[in-house]
Image 1 (tube, helix red, strand yellow):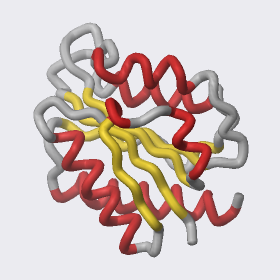
Image 2 (image 1 turned 60 degrees about the vertical axis):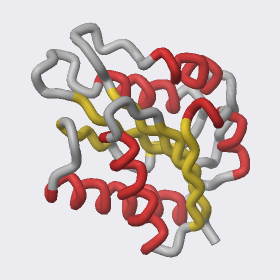
Image 3 (image 1 turned 30 degrees about the vertical axis):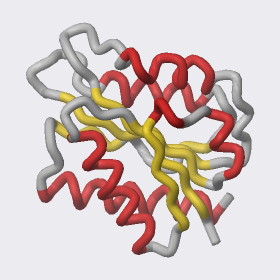
Image 4 (image 1 turned 120 degrees about the vertical axis):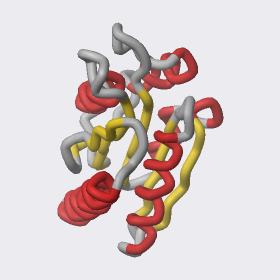
Length: 150
């Protein structure tokens, strides 16, 4: 059975909600899913999973990573995740110029690990609306398909 680890950080609950929707979507596709808050996770945890997913919010005008996920981000670059499939997702506010920059930063960071991009990042404006749920479900199908091909 294909398995997935979703690591996330959330300030307002929006990114946690996206992680939960993604977890349910993957479970519906037959994937064994583990969800962890970033403060309880280490990038080396991904070594035990086929699909490596991360979700983060982007807050403020500069688009910097949230403080609580910086160490995870930096340590991720040191992992060799060759053969794994990755995906990034996040919430942000289109009011800011750097919309969901932190999720895009993780997408780039995962590339350094040798993992294969399963799907382009899912970027959600504030909280997940109906069209976002559809995009999350599509994202889940794409990462699973890529994992099955690998």
